[in-house]
Length: 245
Image (cartoon, rainbow, N blue to C red; front, side, top):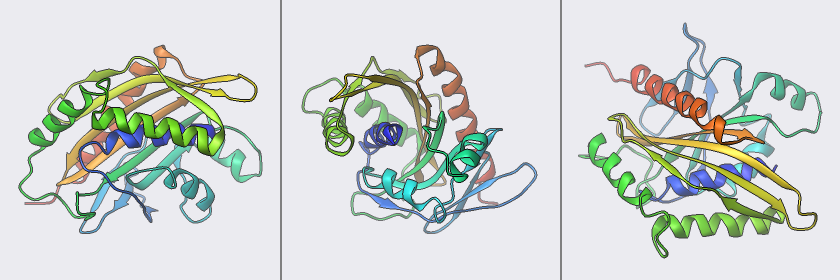
């Protein structure tokens, strides 16, 4: 799936702060409002998925998880797509999902998956902001991550990846966001597929969490709605994951 490789680009960028890789297990819990559980090493975070989105099961849809995780540098802890598309794919239809949402856990430099000790959200956001502002600087961690994503795209799906102008939004006290429109060009045919992407990163209960939202065949006008969606998800993570005093 071509859009899964675009997901990997967003995730590669998210690892600028603390790199590494992995796969996660997950399950859904039913509350009012409906909340999805993200099971981490020492705690369980909870978030509200947008209306109309259903969670991809890591067991019955293992192939999608493996395809995505094989090119990620973070730990995939949740994946959602439109319920209608998921139902059609589970019915055996071959199609490109129109929308994807991913939740990514960043590991510590030593590979640990526990919370960061003595790190404030403000400090983490500042580090991300510093790194993201160097995305176009040759040799920077961000530039190296982008180049790595381009190489993986050519290697795994024989497409050239081109990333448009990147917009950095925030930090806003809760998260920092990066938005862009990318395109994949089939090396053999020259056919081009655009994808709009917004990623948001925050420190939630000490864990470095990235939320990525994508529109297949997307355009610049999709970025503001995606930004609002990512903000809402991160707000829900912050609200529903708080540890009681």
